[in-house]
Length: 101
Length: 473
Image (cartoon, rainbow over all chains, first blue to last red):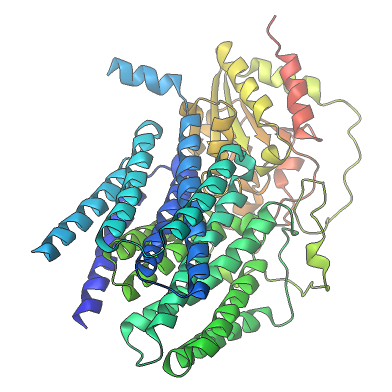
């Protein structure tokens, strides 16, 4: 029971902090935010790794491998596309302002 | 002692992740934020391998490389107009991964009491499965492989709810009695429920659906974290769930519709015909409901000179981009027009409605891709007060977001939705395909306003003709 309690505490605190931080993201960055959080949600790869830590039957190996592939697709693809999108944002105006500051 | 060490390591990784998200408040710092977040993921993987090792190193390496290679390739080639479909597809992959992990873990755990861990595992399986199917439907609709108009089956709402309830019951039964036999049907039912849910959501509501799937993918990961007792999974998953839920609420708020109503789906007549759904979307860029009226006859005089004259005389111009601009691939011409006008001393701003495009922030990346200075991109709430002083509003491929019917007429699907008040400007130039209503089916009162100049037709061509009129001497 205490395990569950702590798990829920971790969930609630992370949710609350995440909520706070993400409210400050300007609408202009909502699309890269979504592709980045999508990559983060592929953290489930850690679950697949935990399962692969011990010997598994071939059937299970196949399922876990599929999970790893899907998660890796999300992680690499998600962070890569986010980076690419962020590099598209250019502004002379903003650059001048920060030079002057 | 080592318990404390592991806790500190986990907390450090979580701190790095949160540091990355925190930097997402401007485009420049966000690049570093993205790298920080990816570092947090990488450290999580390193920690997992260090703590527990792996019994199948070759399999792990092969699967990782395969997924990473495909992901990288797709990320480098996708265009911004394809981004919503790609993000939806990725949510699907995330949901699938969570469902598979939960399924194997539940199978390993065998049958037994319904404790919190196993119920969380079931949640991970069912939410992951529903996220997978819902996302795939969303991706298919967004990429045009499936018609974007909402599909309504007989008894749709009841059927969706029933399927999800039966899936939950079957899953719980499976945990108690017979995991091998019943977990798969439960997962398949959840997937069916997710598909039924998504298929009823139409094109313009896609931003809400994608944001919601973002949240459920995170929730599925967190649920897996509970059964696997993995702090990082829970923390990372919860953060993503928070992000998705905020974006979902922001989207609904921007349409002034309650989330529950958006999820109830399109309230229309049953329109299912067997196999009809798989006809490719038509080439025409309009994804609105069937036409309400015959198109108006072509105007006797060419509206282009009047439009050019208004633009030449204008000191302050506001451009309102919409999804139609992206479909016509006119954003590059529009970007050139903005640059041209800025160069000759006019004030140019882009006014972006929160639900323009097919996902939150879609218009912004489309315009950034077309090399528009992001300083020119403004939000609706910031620009609306200035529209009364604006000489020309140029609407390109947008309809509902500037339709005064939203504020002047009661009882329409868009009544009460905040709009960009283009009708307050001195002149309005509309570069839309035709006079057809937008997605909501509500006729656009702006079209009949005497101050409006309609440049109808393919937006890429109409903007090109405007560009020709402003060619440098």
